[in-house]
Amino acid sequence: MHAKFLQPRLPGLEDRIGRMSGSRTKEDVLIALRRIMRAVDLHSRDLIQRYGLTGPQLILLREISRADEISGTDLAAAVSLSLPTVTGILGRLEDRGLVERRRSELDRRRILVRATSAALGILDAAPPLLQESFVHQFDRLRDWEQTQILSTLQRLVAMMEAKDLAASPILDAGSLDPAGSTESSKV
Image (tube, rainbow, N blue to C red; front, side, top):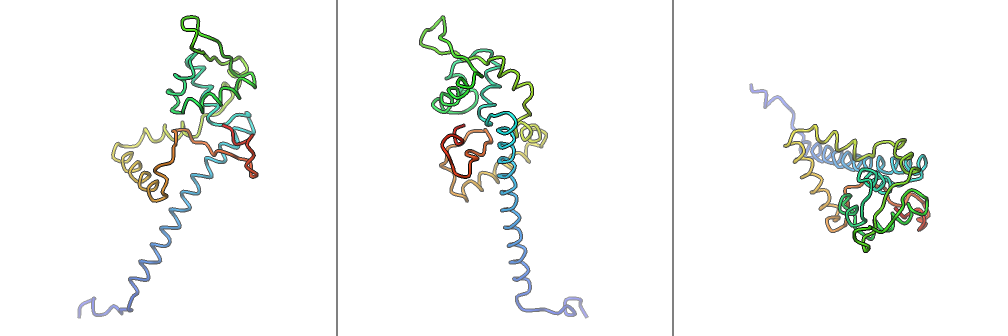
């Protein structure tokens, strides 16, 4: 007798097992997405609590200190944010005494920004940003693995109907205030 004839067959068993494993896979994907969102949220909260800065503010300060002095337009391009967003962030950083603005001597229309000594002190103590750790590990992957991750993430974006949402390469949780106050929602 063949082994095939000795195995009992239960009608629909394979279908039920397939549905159960598919359901678990869906749950695992949703859990993984939630873990990513939670990691971004926790990192953002830690930056705010320990340094009083959001991720985008810290990124701008780092770029300004690297450049020594930079225009808002060049800064916006360097960090992949819109000029209005950068202008708003710079205003808040200036209010806190972390950046100074001055007119360029060569072109009086240009406003140049530089980091203050207070900002440099914060930058010396600040931890790496979440995306810096990710990029470091991502760079160690093979090309095909990087492409596979990109393809999968692009598919997820489409599935979540988020392909038309604007986004920058800065991982930030946005407003961390449960009440959604406008003050804490400012980056």
